[in-house]
Every structure is written in structure tokens, then in C-alpha cells.
Length: 73
Image 1 (cartoon, rainbow, N blue to C red):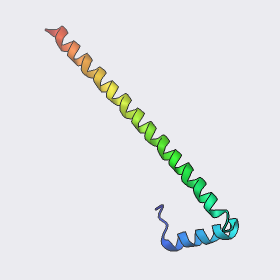
Image 2: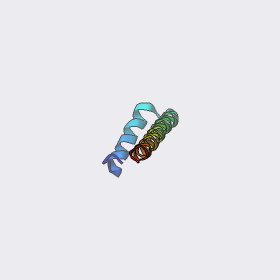
Image 3: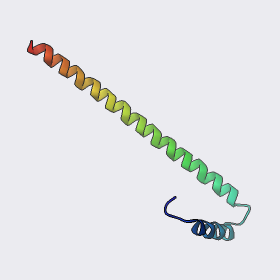
Image 4: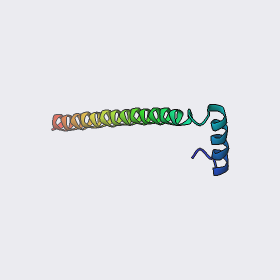
């Protein structure tokens, strides 16, 4: 995960604990989780839209190839 080892993660968590306090950490974690989930959802939507556009282009190209082959006959 981002090239961080166990020791680095523990140090980061300890610093966060001292800076924000024990009561704020769950709220911060929940906010980060929601943000990450929304980001992944948006990324998934973009990927789905890209695939849909690509398939529409492929269908259009196949239709043109078919029309061109019929015109040559």
C-alpha cells in the first residue's frame, strides 16, 4: 500500500492520534472512507461510460464496413 511498511503506518497513526485526539479519529476515518468510496464510484462510472462509448464506436465501424462491402458488389 503506497510502499509503506507496518512501522511507517504505526508512526503515522500515532502522530494522527496525538494531533487529532482519540475522539476525532473515528470521525476522520469515516469521512476518509466515504470520500474514497465516492472517488471509486466516480472512477467506475467513468470506466463504464468509456466502455459504452467504445462499443458504440465499434458498432458504427462494423456498420460502415458492411455498407462499404455491399456498395462494392
